[in-house]
Length: 152
Ligand SMILES: [Ca+2]
Ligand SMILES: [Ca+2]
Image (tube, rainbow, N blue to C red; front, top):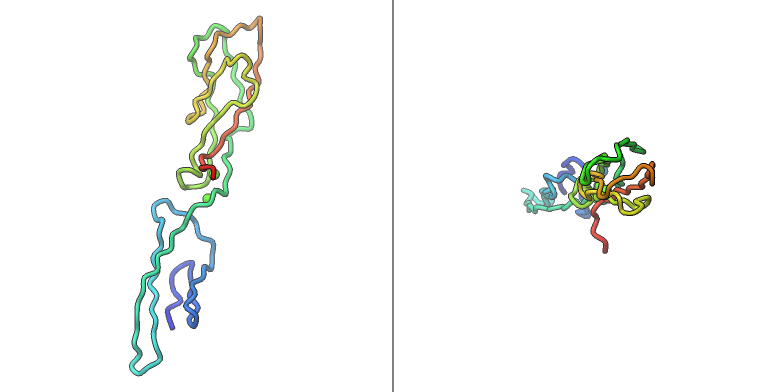
């Protein structure tokens, strides 16, 4: 016998198997859930034993990063100094553990002549080379946001 108890869990009173009865959410402040299981025999008087069960909840990378905007546009003067920030792209990820949540940004297309660079952690797009409007008036960059899941 036992107490079914504890939010999110219940125990089969005969087998002692512990089940979840709702989805668990990873909580970065509480990685481990502790359950206290009591075994009671049917004697008179009944005798009991108590055990602690620790359950570790591991975050699954089930959320992809999402950009705040589907596209970003910036108009700049051709004589702005190198090192200037053109614009900052921003994505968020709803996972909560560090590697599943933190984002790296990369430019994957359109960076003709390596004119731009992106700060991988902040999404800031910087001008690395002088612009010349007569040579090229428009750039279309494709930027990806990736969470930091370690590859196996
Ligand atoms: Ca998750
Ligand atoms: Ca993620």
